[in-house]
Amino acid sequence: MSVELPASRCLRCGFEAPPGEGWSTVEVPKFGTMTRCPECGSTDVMTGQ
Image (cartoon, rainbow, N blue to C red):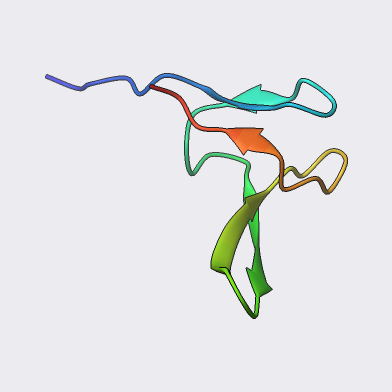
């Protein structure tokens, strides 16, 4: 039995994909690793809940 995770969504351009699928990451010194949209590069991402 597999569980499908809700999609995460970029609040800037609307790109959606399940967490970990298609998303890239960026290292930010004060915050650590952040999820980054592969379409527009924004880190303003709402994770699926």
